[in-house]
Amino acid sequence: MTSKTDHQNLPMYVQITELLIRDIGAGRLIDGERLQPEREMSIRLGVSVGTLRKALKELETKGLLERVQGSGNYIRAGDQSSGVYAMFRLELHEGGGLPRAKTLDVDFVEKPADLPEFGTSAHGSRVRRLRSLNDTIIAVEEIWLDESAGRVDKTSVSESLYRYYQQQLGFWISRAEDRVSIGPVPNWAPKEFTKPVGDTVGFIERFSWSDKPQAVEFSRTWFDPDRARYVQRLR
Image (cartoon, rainbow, N blue to C red):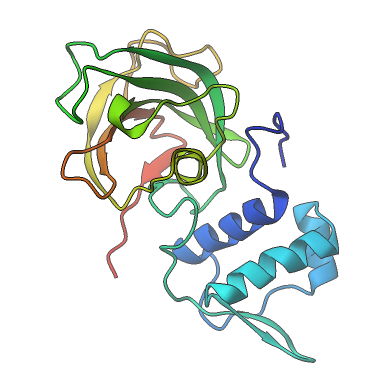
């Protein structure tokens, strides 16, 4: 797995847990399926057996794994909504993929005129990131957090902003509304992105709420449809 600076990384066992949760959601791991033996699985994932066992314990706690003594570990495809990336809707075409984020910049600025109304303040934290699934670059995104919810500190922001909100700002995102269409790649997109500035790609606008009536976050994501797809599963 690709390494990043320590302040951005989720703990490795959490990364493995999230990868497996997304594979369950994508149907790559099905209910009742027996996982590889732990040693083989740890080698395939490039982690220690101890780290893998910690990840499997998390899955068991979430009700997504049954560990049968002397037989192995079996998938139980229950509710995946407790995952760190439960609201991340982009997947590789073959399904799943662990979300990655490379932070491009973090600023606290006045909201521009082209943003829709959200929150209660005229200012907010703006986070721009390059997104990947596993090691495949798939998207660029711009996230705005209303000043009323706190400020994003660029020295401590993590790969999962929702986890950062919980741990550093003391709130969590409880619901979101997505609007999916197409749009041109923004002029700030880095050269590493797979499509040039101005090209038409998949486009997602998202409003997110905590426990307040006004949305506290608004985001825009431009994704490469040749590499990823938007998936919403209804259960």
